[in-house]
Image 1: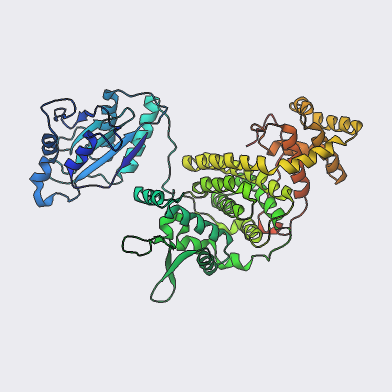
Image 2 (image 1 turned 30 degrees about the vertical axis):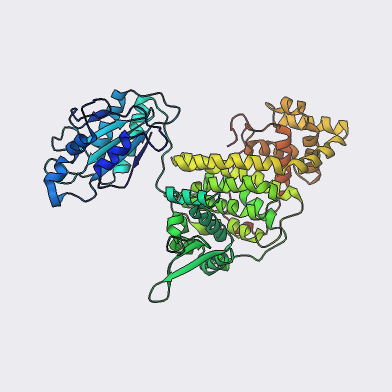
Length: 548
């Protein structure tokens, strides 16, 4: 269940006109009261002699009695909506829910004879509206601070007691949504996104590429965005605001958005903290193997999340978001839509109430900046390897959020993983074809030798893998790992341990791809010292430890 408490208003009759009216698209069916403050309020929906004027007078009685002491914005309006898959609730159940929410918010505490006057109106199957006037019987205002938080906590208990869907709850770190006016403006101008959404994406991409705050503003200005920097009298930067070129209000002035209104982590203090001088001074110049370095850093994320403190874990998740923000700028055109959807979905997963220790993730973040300063690799395998690592890292981030009870962030990570899987499938078509070509030329006796390796490393999965069309490709990859000086059985066990096989259509292809990555990643990286070492952990059988 979701509660939506709108900004207080001053026209009780206006709200009632909407609740008892046909709706914007004639969606209101059989509007009627399910409960009221005394059980005797007139119901214009069910009683032919009752009128909206009478109901308004009943609700506004104490407002009139309070006179000048009454708050100007005296109308409290809350809608409560059930999930689409929830069973239909009866009027009596909705009445009980309304009373519990009013009690929790302080609008109408149970047993209080001076509680505010209120009604609960139902005009659809899946939700109700509660309207109250914020003057008590003693003509004082109610104590309803943090009413949304208290209503939401009560709905959590109601969901469990009534057997309804338990909706993921947030921690107030989500970016502010576009308003209805902004959405309608985007529709009128033929834009697929609102100005707020476009500016948020632009700012996040600029942040991923920047090394200093000034660099951030320079990149923003070069992307066609209007930038205005705000300063203290001392000359120090206080904040900034940005606007889309050509996006104006009715006076013809640019529609500005401050960084903090785009997203909590886009405020200037947050950006300044992330782009601290210590990090900028340690940035490495672009190197030819930037894509490999980024894949290495991304591949370390699952283990780092499992063994780091919370602040360091949050830093690696924020760096993971920067990777997703930057990748569409260098990816082939056919992969960009899914990669952009993944970045947009993961945006909320990048934040939580835990304050990130950004310096702990500087290796990953420097690698992100490096790939933006050099062309994309011509070899599609490098990009596919990175996307494969990103899938695992995002799944690990989802698990991290779940363990910290960050429900909305975990859901955002799940959605991002789905988009990344789609991009991965498209990116691996050509590289996988090359692997299959090698497998077709592998001698039969070598395939038999590698079959023994598979049975030794993965006794529970071996027969399925051997029966797949992709088995020769995996066998050829095992031979290559042995030639490179690795233990094929140990490497295959490690590949199965780390990779999420539950969603794989071909175990052999996934494992072959993973082996290629592991054989390369076991080599020392140019900036391996910038991240803390990962404790060595025992490798358990694949059936005992399911992939994340």
